[in-house]
Image (cartoon, rainbow, N blue to C red; front, side, top):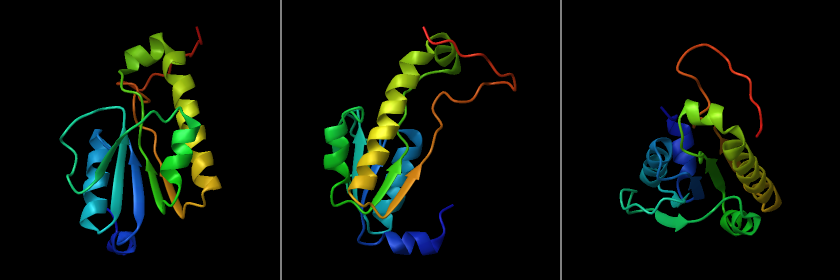
Length: 141
């Protein structure tokens, strides 16, 4: 649950939600729209199920120029984008996740810093946790 104080602060803010078509992103978009923020949802998915109050932007966050453009005149960034896949795929092809995620994260965070974004929230959730408690070694192939 997001505190009322934070939701009140969102009123009138320009916000982007990366991964805005995903499970976490869709809810973040809805909450921010409900709070009166001007929201852009950024994703590689082209789906119609996002909140109609938000602008949907199709974009690849591994492109630094796009990240610069997205964060320009943006107050808040909620970075919840990831690469979809199971823990099995993460284990068998770690570089296919690692490299693009590092690029997305670095690009977006640096663009937000350069453009003076007021707040940045970053999460990591996609394919990061195993179904059990065991850890696994990562070998880049």
